[in-house]
Length: 187
Image 1 (cartoon, rainbow, N blue to C red):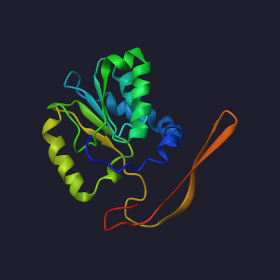
Image 2 (cartoon, rainbow, N blue to C red; image 1 turned 135 degrees about the horizontal axis):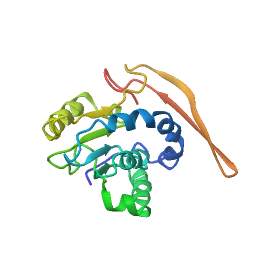
Image 3 (tube, rainbow, N blue to C red; image 1 turned 30 degrees about the vertical axis):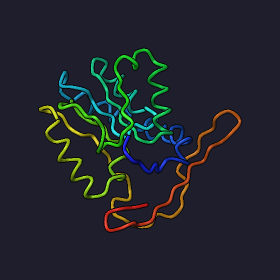
C-alpha cells in the first residue's frame, strides 16, 4: 500500500450507513449504465469502493463479470473485505485492492469503471494522470461512470445536515461542510 492520508480515518466508521440512501437513489441508473458495458472484456473496477455497496450492485447487475474493488481507506476497506468474504458469490468474483487508484494493480484491459463520489478526491494533475493511465485499459465500448457532486466549483459550503440513519436504539446524523483549498479543490 502506498503512503496514504486517510480522509475517512474518523468518519469512515459511519460512512457506509450514511451513504446507503445515495446508493438507494442511484442504483437503478447505475445498473442501467452497467448493462451497457461490453461483456467479457475484463473486470469492472469499482474505484473508491468504500464499504462495497457499489461492488455488490456491480456483481448483482453483471453476474458473469469479475469485479476489482479498489479502496485505500483502511476503515472502509475493512468493511468491504468483510462483506466480500462473507458472501460466497462475491468471494469467488471480487478482488479487493487496498491501494489508491493511482497506485492500484489494474489489469491491462477493463470492461468499465464506476467512480461514485470519487473524482473530487483527485487534484487536477492527478486526474490527468488517471485519465492517461485508464484510457488505454478501456476495452472497446467500455466507459467510466462517474458523478460530479455539488459544488462543481470551489466555493464554501456551510455546515449542513446530510442525513440521518437509525440503527437499533441510536440515530446517526451526518454533517458536511467544505472550504476552497485552491483553484480546483475543496477540503
